[in-house]
Image (cartoon, helix red, strand yellow):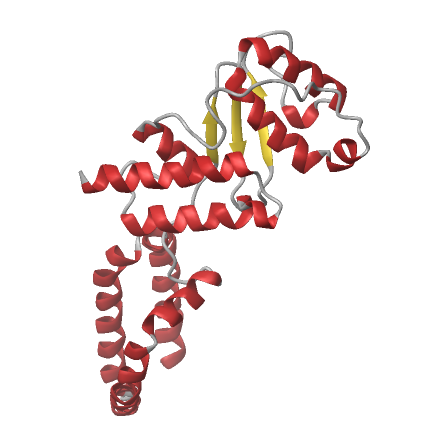
Length: 250
């Protein structure tokens, strides 16, 4: 009889997972509280039916007693514990999606996990080509064209070459002119729209302050100049964070 009961229980659990479980796992943690309470209630009922309730309640009581003893310690070191969990991806805010920056001729993207930069050229002689598929000579030719047609793309191209072709730069094989003048005085950046800031950080329209800060921190871990990143990209990411937080405070 017990074998039949467990077979039925397994079948119900299997169907429940495929019908509802997969969808539940895609929900935010806050939306999972009610289903979890329902599941716990069902398990307790099954424990009572099978005569195992006393053992389960004894375990729960022991866990609660332990929790009350360690709670003050957890509260004291909560900020440090939270940061440690974030580093391992546990209970962390939604990470940034692909960071995007657009100019007149280039749709650039940054992978926040690897730090790799790429971009698709949207107009001109090299239209439709990705930077990652081009030779350093073609990228140099595109760079020189951008000096006249798309000055905003120059720094993105420089950041790409700095990461992907460091030996070419060190050996003096980077043939693009280094005399091009970027728009605006050194160290200054034009105002950024909220939509552009969201694209750069790769966050949703309804991103919270915590998610914005977390996305900024993850991107800066790859882009900070002290870690071999691009000063220009790091500046843009900083500006994106400031723009979104100022928008939320307004």
